[in-house]
Image (cartoon, rainbow, N blue to C red):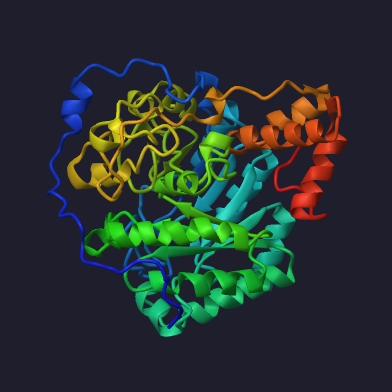
Length: 461
């Protein structure tokens, strides 16, 4: 079912990956990388702007790809963070960045009895709170409650428009119908929703149809996740590097088609390289200031496991420490493991690549394959050509300085890091074109409405 991606002939797996061999100890026993980010950031820019809170292993599904190997609804782990421990963790994240976006997920977060209390606490602290869910437990009452709490939206997973295929993958009959019913409940009650799609051999050719379907439903965002085979998904077959490249090329082209909906690749930094190859001025790349859509692991993003381990991303069980034993603040700011992501000494083709600053490859793939998260990403087909490194926006000269009044500077500072440089560049370009000597909040709001309509801004200013 679904329209094939009309780009490449699909071949078999391009590269055979080696077996998993522990190289973590070798890395940790060597000298720590010398601080000095290659993309122009300072230590102040390494703030968490997106934290995934995997607060339970309990789930009402049995998904084949679950990186958490989530258990049944009645189960879960006996060592999950308690309500009070979750509150304390949220308080500590607020010490580092109260403007962070918190993704409350699981397992299935809505099966945890205290999850709404945890969401209330996070909203009261000023966080942007969203839920990652399978949507099956969202009815009108739940959607209304989430809106009343102040939850900004939910991401609901749809793996196929073929109901039986989705249900087989999710492990429970009726999962597709209940997920779509959850989306409709969100729409009726004014709760924004995103559609999440995991690209796999069984469904990746449906992607054009799924994106069209999500757009028709009114999704604000479609996130396409590129699976790393860990957890219960360890035995699954990933899409091949050729298929990976094919899907990413299609997603780059999607940006011109869906002006009122964001379509983004997740866990696929190559997206940045392909966007730049198509258009060096593309608003999707770090070369123009958009830091999202690539890999933010341990730089502006991290995951907390149900029992409190802080890891760079959900696909890497590589712990910086446990929030029960150390403050989130200390772990975030002083972890040698996290520093290795912030000041990376990449190896192989990734180290040689002219796109290493705006892409950098997926760090989870070499880690899962053989334990070295700084090695080259074997799922990338690109051969470096030896040119100068393409620089991110921090290292590109400004065309001219445009003044910002104090209120506009404050609003800009509250925009998440991964969007801030892009917003700044766009606003200043508009001001120059209009001959405006100073940027004001009114100008920023005018431009926001032109881009997103009259809806309230996503970020709380």
